[in-house]
Image 1: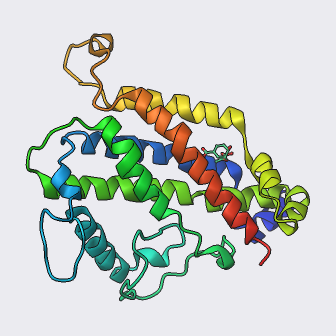
Image 2: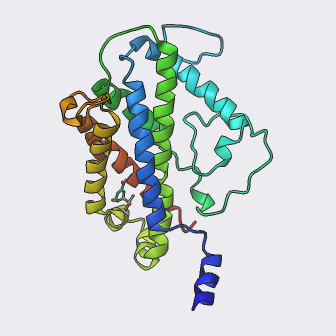
Image 3: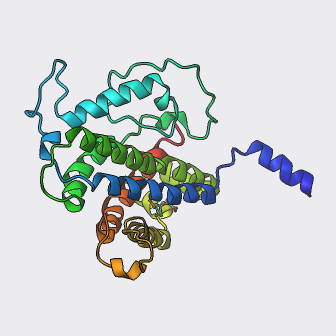
Length: 262
Ligand SMILES: C=C(O[C@@H]1C=C(C(=O)O)C=C[C@H]1O)C(=O)O
C-alpha cells in the first residue's frame, strides 16, 4: 500500500485543488495588506497625469514610468521566467540575465500568453482606487506609485493563478471539460469551474482580513472600540473581490482551458 501511494506521488507534480486554494487564501493577506499600504496616501492625482512630468522616452504618467522601469529590472533578474508572473508591459522587456531556473512544468505552455493585466490596470485605477483612498494630494507621488505597483503585482499574481486553478480542475474532471473545450463552449466551462460556496467564503474572508489587518492596534485596547475605523473599508475589499478579482480569475481560467488541448 505504502509503495503504491509513493509511486503515484512520484509522477504527480504536487498540484492539488487544496494547495491551489491555500495559496489563494495566503495571497489574500498580501492583497489586503498592499491596499492598506496604498491607503496611507491620498489619491495624489498627479501620479497618474501624463502632463505632470516629461522625460525622454515618453513613459506617460509617473506610475507608468515606475511600473515599466521596475518590470525591466525585474525581467533582467528573471522574474518573468516564472510562469506565475505576468508583466503589465510585456513589449520590449529585456531578457533575463540570470542562469535559467528549472520551473516544474505544470501549465500547458500553449497558454503562456494569456495575460489580463491590461484589464487589471484599468479596473485597479478606475474602479478600485477612487473607492478606497481619500481624495487629496500630499505630494508623495513616488511612494504612491511604488504602492500602486505593489498592489498591481499581487493582484496580477492572484488573478493569473486562475491558470493553476483551471489546470487542477481540468485534471480532476477532464471527462467533462474536454468536450466543452473542443466545442469552444465558454458557458459550460464557466459553469463547470464555478464553485459558488467557495466564492461566498472568499468574499467573507477578505472582509474579515480587512477588519483584522486594518484595525488600529493599541495596547490595552479592546478590538471593538475600533469599530468603523479601519484602514481600508472591508466592504470595499469584499465587493472588489466579488465584482472583479473573482470574475477576472475565472476569465483567466476559461482562457487557459480553451488552450489546454492545443
Ligand atoms: C478558485 C476557484 O475557482 C473559482 C474561482 C474562485 C475565486 O476566484 O476565488 C472561487 C471559486 C470558483 O468559482 C476555486 O474553486 O477555488
